[in-house]
Every structure is written in structure tokens, then in C-alpha cells.
Length: 240
Ligand SMILES: [Zn+2]
Image 1: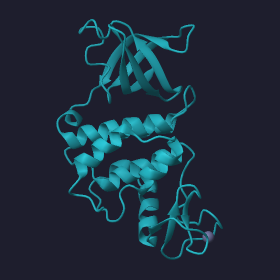
Image 2: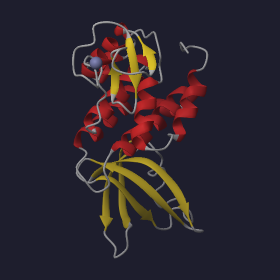
Image 3: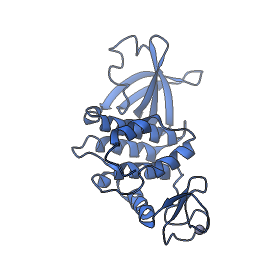
């Protein structure tokens, strides 16, 4: 089975728990026995962002055991600078958090696969690509925010309005309150959501960079650890 490593934790003195995203089984955790004790066992294969072919043995308990892991593609440029590392970890955590445990997640898996490829390109991804990633991930998880129509009345957004996580996205000023957003911002997010991720690289971005991330956080139910890293990595070249 093909899988992408999205995280890992130490388990006892000698093992690790590796968290994987797969197309067929969504989010999967497995024990990699001996991964801490022996440097050769699973050498380099359990780093986040690594694409693997794995063999899992289902145990009696909740956790499967990782019996074999072959590296298909490992991050290269996405290991070289802080921004790329942060963007890689953020993509892994976002896609995995929105994927079901043990259920089909083909489109989220494909999205993360492309994100990892894009991070290896010469051109650095920017805020437009980050927002596109978030909007697409939410869409593939069935949680797309209302952008061009009002979340409350369903009529088209025709002017600046509000954005409220609890209401489900964009709102007419007369339909509810929330963070103020411009019509251009709403339309830009919608355009990015529908643009192939690779084609968003290098696109300019103005306006709030984190509203869609906030919407994702609301649905995930907890903050993403990698978001702080990504905010640190991008501070200075983002519109607040
Ligand atoms: Zn409305």
C-alpha cells in the first residue's frame, strides 16, 4: 500500500509510532518496532513528507505494525530551508487532520502528494498556494466554506461581507456578523480553490492569509502544530 508519512512519535525505548496518510484507509497509525533502537531499521523512511510503499500487519489492538517500508520519494528541497520544511509539515498535518481514520481519502492523499511535489520545485510556493491547499483540503473533506454564496441565505455575495466559521463561511452584512472580508478576497479564494495546485505557485496574494486556516482549525477542533512554524517562517512577507 502506498502511504505518506505525516508524523511520528517515540514509543518506549526502541519503537516509534508512525502516522500515515493513505488513499484507501485515510489516517493510519502503525508501530515501527526497533525504529529507535536500530538506525538501519527504517533508516530515513519515517521522516514526515516521505512517500512509502508499506506493509502493515493488523494486530489485535488498535495499532497495526509496520513490517516493511520502501521509500518511493523522500523530501529533498523540502529539507533545505525553514520555510519549505514548515510548509511540508503544515501540508502533512492539515491533510491528515481532515482525513478520516480508516476511511477512503483519495483526494486528500492526492492533494498532499502534489503539495510535496510542488515543494521540490525551484520556485518557492507562496501564500496563494497555502490558501489554495487549505481550501482544497476542506473541499475534499466535505467541509468547503461558503465563498461566493452566503452561508445563511444562499444568495450570491455581491459586495463585501463577513466570514464566520460557525455559520459556515461568507455572510451578507445583513445576514450575520463575523470577520470583515472583501468580495475580492472571497472570489480570490474561490478561484484558488478551483485552480490546480501547481498553477497557484507564484500567484500574488493580498488580504488575510489565515482565515481559511482558522476555518479548518474550527472544523478540526484543535490548532495545528505546524501552523506556528509556518507563521514564523513567513513572518515579514505576509499581509497581516
Ligand atoms: Zn445572506
